Length: 504
Image (cartoon, rainbow, N blue to C red; front, side, top):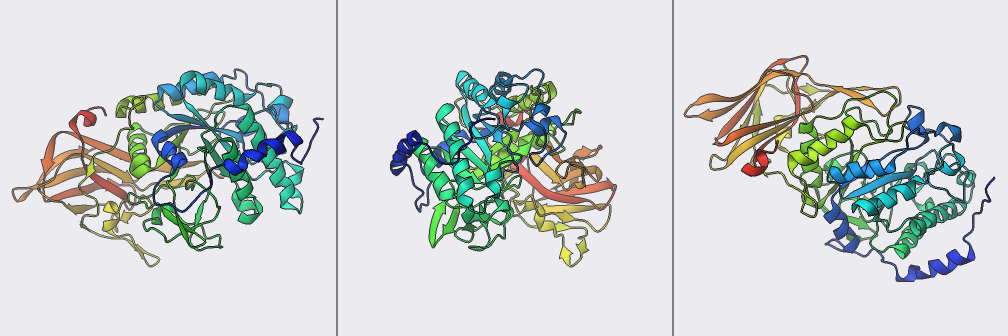
């Protein structure tokens, strides 16, 4: 049994003396240095790996025997090579999930890789590979710990000290860490996590490390009414739940095109960018499963990339290793193909989407579903919000989008609303679309002219590229066949630079 301790040792006390020099969060309307560096990175690879990988579940409670962790061909170097080849700028590694299992040899627990059949220090291996391949290194650490005994102590400081000890191990033994992603805060009151202590501790090691906790923002100060990113369209309206924090998280929600950056704490306003998290898997599984699962389409990955990195926000894509300890080849191919498709180049700014000429434009529909007092209005398809949707009242119908005839376009993206079936693990799901056939027309010389026919199911996201530019006062999207009442989240009509439009 390892020697366990819950107080900071003398040498750590000396180290903590540097905290006074650490960066503090101050009211601001522009990004500070840590936020600037985060925005510049912009695009990272999320890696979920641990005991859950070997049990086909997403969350476990710390009761899985450490012997279950037994990768047969553990290769963190391969993970980071994939990240490099896919154009990622940083790697965000799950170091400890809610089960408490640690991917490094921690002096404060036996529930770690050092006590397992495969004793490789995965945190060190990933950190070393990041240095080797020129990527930055970030860590995820779960606040909620379902294994550690001190978590159950009535005095929350006992567990706060445990976390500070483990975070000290991470921040002193594994080189520079650019981001700390904290999770599981819902299991305690915000004030019982010692966020002020954690923030000061980490900033003492690296003032430019960006720090946040999942579900960062709430609707009302002091209340746990979590704020969906889709409504964050006004400055100085919503409040910190966890302070201090350098950026916003709500895993796996998406912000709107009109995301705002100013958030309140004790009457002061602070600048906060947003970091998105999505899965490469179309099943939304975070830990890899024993069976091969389908990946998202290149169309969907492309448009989610543009959406999530727009307006000084960031994106991490989860690509989890399997039970062998390697990233599966078909998933690696998907994310590497995405980088080539959209033209991600090392040391250059991330590619951007074109100009949305349909943004906030008027829309009319052949019919509108009203259900339980909610009207699924046509204007949802141009509102820049992927949580809202238009739904027809019939299985066929159309949308007419008003456009400025002086503005041109050569690309259309369509996000269809999906039916979702939740799977047994409580997280993964299967999405299925309704729209089977459709056409796109423009108003030209007093007639509707068809410029695209979709003769197959649309899927989660459809990208239509044209070899030329069009200009029109109206665009019609018509649904010819659907398995149920069709619904659309967004239709984006885009003026895309020709060179980039050809890459798809």
